[in-house]
Every structure is written in structure tokens, then in C-alpha cells.
Image (tube, rainbow, N blue to C red; front, side, top):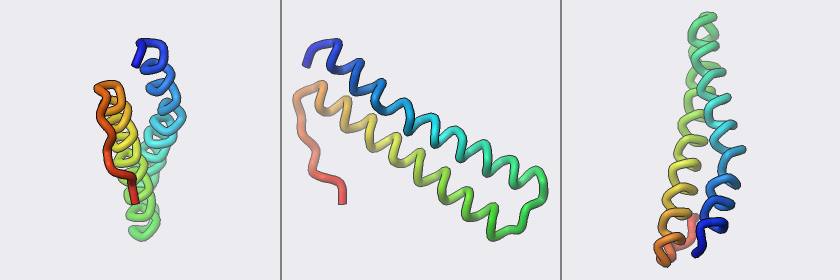
Length: 74
């Protein structure tokens, strides 16, 4: 894999990273304003899920850059 392809794959993940950051910000804002516990927990789960997706995506980008294929996500 050449450098341009790798950079392109990394850049393709940037919108997902931004979503995860925004979700974490929303979670912290809900905590700060004293939102109901159910809402805070829901926002925490959304943020956690998005950061896990970012991590999975980045792992796959690095694996592909090294010429390895990972099993499909389910």
C-alpha cells in the first residue's frame, strides 16, 4: 500500500472521529447541566460506541497497510 492510499484511508475515518468527539462533548454537557440519568447514560453509550468504531476502523487501516486482512466485523 502506498503512502497516498494509507493517508486517504486515515482521512476517510475523520468524519467518524468527529462524530465520536461531538458525542463525548454532548455527554459531558448533559452531565454538567444535570440531565436525567437515563439521558446521560444513553449519551455515554453512544459516545462509547462511536469511539469503539473509531478504534476498530483504525485497527483495520493499520492492518491493511501492513498487508494483513482481519475477519469481517459482525
